[in-house]
Image 1 (cartoon, one colour):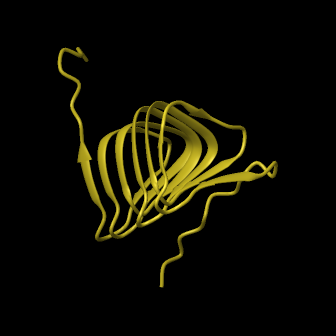
Image 2 (cartoon, helix red, strand yellow):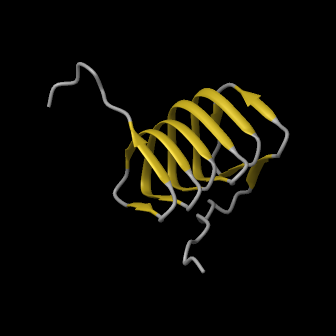
Length: 118
């Protein structure tokens, strides 16, 4: 049994991108976002993000308060609080967060930044 918690939303509401739904574009919201379908875009921003085991997210920039990922995510993820990669999650990209939790069975493939000088 996992001690994983769903992120707390801002209390204002939540948006669910349901299984079988494909959405392309820029998503910005002041509440929680749950992805069970497919989302592709330049930018995704929300207070909290949940990507279910069936969900897929591909974005140039993902900005959230916190994220729980069980599905597939590709992009640059910035989280103010934490990122939790559940068993079965597949993440390709970069993560900027004060707390990163990678559960056994999750796949994290970090991207490199060619030309970036330290």
